[in-house]
Each structure stands twice: as C-alpha cells, then as structure tokens.
Length: 447
Ligand code: GAP
Image 1 (cartoon, helix red, strand yellow):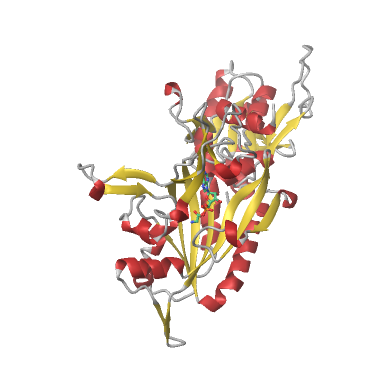
Image 2 (cartoon, helix red, strand yellow; image 1 turned 180 degrees about the vertical axis):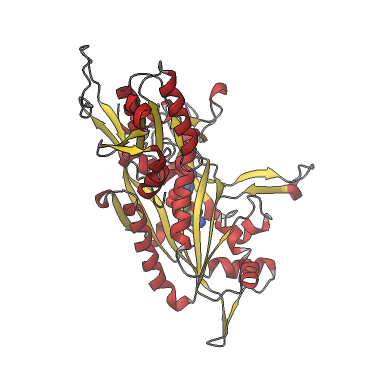
C-alpha cells in the first residue's frame, strides 16, 4: 500500500474522512469530514485565522456562497479565464484535462481522443422558482469575490486606511474535469483567503512579506522545510487575474503539487468591478491626496490540501511497535504489526486528551474515569475509551494523534492521582486529579 492509500484507509477507519453519500455509491469529488476530520479541519481554520489576525489592520468577513451573476462576468470567471481544456476518449468516453495527458491516446484504454475544447468550471444553479436564463447563478469558485464586492462596505464601516487586509473562510465549488488523489482536488472544498488592499508601490514588498509568512506557517505547524518549495509561475501559466503568482508546493506522496497560491492581483478586481457595477471603487488617500485603485495581494489556500499535507507529514509507522509499557507481564506472544503514530502538532490534533480506565470490570475505577472525563470535557476535546487492553488503547490514541492519555488505575482509588502519558515521549507522569485541568491547560497552551 502506498502512503496515500494508507492515509485514505486510516481516515476512513478512524473517522477522519469518508466518501460523500457512500451508501449510494458516492459522488465524484466530494468528501465528508467525520468526527475527527471535522475537529482537525476546525483546528486548521482556527490556527490560520489566529495567525492572520495577529497582523495589523486585518478584519474578517463571511459573505454569501451565491453572488449576483454579474460578479462572475466582471471577475472573468464566465469567460476564458476560468476554463480548462478538456479531451474525451472516443472509445470509453472518459474525460481528461488536456494538460494532464502525456500523449494523444486515452490513458485508460488507449482509444483516440477528441480535439480539446474549453470547459468552464463554474457550478451553475438557479435562484428562485423559475429556471430560465434570468435566474441562473453560480456557486462561488473562490471566496475572495465576496471580499472585493464588499470593499466599500468594509472600508467605510470599519474606517480603515490602506494597507488593510480582509480574511474569509468558506466553501468554494469547481466542476473539475477530473478529481484525483483523494482530497487533493475536489469539486467542493473550503478556502481560506486573505486579500490585502495596498498602494500599488507597496505591492511587491508586501507580496514578498506574505510569501515568507505563509511558508513559516506551514513549518511552524510541523511541515519539514525540505517538503515545501516555492515556484514562481510564468506569465503563460498564471491565473487570469494575476500580475505575479507564486505557488507554495508540498511534496505529497504522489509528487510536488500546489498547496497555496500567493497572487499580486494588481487592480484587476477593483477596476473591473467598478466598470461592471458603475460604482467608484477607487480609494482616496488623504496623505498623498491621490485617488487610485488599490492593488491586491492575495494568499489563497484550501483547507483540505494542508489537511492532507499535515496527515502525510504526521503519519509514522513504527515497525515492531513502540517501546512496551513497563511491568506488562503478558506471557502471550503477540505478533506486533507496525504501529501507527500520527504526530500532529498539538494545536491540530483532533483529540487532546483521552481518559482510559485501566480495567473495565472494576466499577470504582470506571466510575472515577467517567468523573475525570466529565471534568475534562468542558476544557479539552476529549475521548473516553474502555475497550481492549491498555496497550491497545494507547495505540488507538497514538493512531489519531491524541496528545495525552490519562489512565485511572488502582492507585487512583487510594490517592486521587492518575497517570498522564505523553504521546511523543511516552513518559508517564502522576498527577493529582485536582491539579489535572491546570496542568493540562499549561501543557496545551494555545491549543
Ligand atoms: N482566489 C484565488 C484562487 O482561488 P486558486 O489557485 O485557484 O486561487 C487557491 O486556488 C487554492 O485553493 C489552491 O492552492 C488550493 O489550495 C485550493 N483549491 C483550488 N482548487 C481546489 C480543488 N479543486 N480542490 C481542493 N482545493 C482546491
């Protein structure tokens, strides 16, 4: 099994990611995030949001998924800007993105291919009860347009001065010709976008600043430097709105692929929205007594690609298992399979604390463990597990990246202490129950 397959299998088995509508055979390019995947996703979004809000002059927005369809005329998404070249196999009728086909034969059945034609990626829908041309609109393919069309509202209501940034997290939809590599390219995904409005002369400097900030963000969350690279995108390959584009790429198990785009969008968006809407979206700079369209520096990333990268980076298999717990005197020979350890950053780990009664046939121990679980739950994302041997339960927690495992044992009944096992060092510390929340809060600062 290759690493992608292993991650897919772990994701399904342990409640991270499921294919959407699986009982009906699924739907291409859509995934559901299970109890743990949802926590992981929320943690990624939280860390991203916090890192952005640390900046001066940064505000948030939550705009609609549906916009007036004229937005998409102005943004260039309904014209050539947002279409991929599609070829179809004349024999098996499968469709492919032209730039992903090596030769001129079908990669599936070697059949002949049709000539390439443009395929627009916008997801069409209708607003209101009448399904005619006047009610057509689209699910947004990027969240940033909601920011651009609110430029004046935000500027005026928040009394901002340039440079200032607007951030947004939300769903985007693209009718991708092909979806592949698990959650890497899907038709429904979430984006985290930052749009910085600035003076044109400041744009280059701010572009470089943001490129560095975004690279640091991944490294700070555990992605190795050697698995990240920055690619300057040539004029021919840039997005239709970009004056300059740098992709941050990650070394996925299937090769180097884009994880995030940093764009200098120039005045493309504000000048086009001004033209199409008739509203004056120029900024009046009191200091210089100038009126101009601000340039926009954008950092744009899906939630799912970093999530996939974090899982890839954190996934470890330890052949023969990790060091066994002391005093385990089992005479039964256990054939140890490789143990999985998901070494996610503690801010990202979906479960921070697991509570495990040493045995489940001692009502006093079980009762105490449940009390501790109730004590921790309001403070930390926690789980209670009493099924199987304690070693097996530690392994189950390691497999999903749980930071601490609390064991309630016979000594607990005597002195009100528990053992707190650290996922990474496997060190076990005895802590008084009355100090437990405080001690965990210190260890899980910023989580
Ligand atoms: N507003 C600019 C913009 O949307 P993009 O390069 O088209 O730029 C930015 O997309 C990011 O959104 C990508 O780097 C990727 O992380 C994510 N993304 C785009 N299409 C995606 C898809 N089909 N599935 C998953 N993530 C996608």
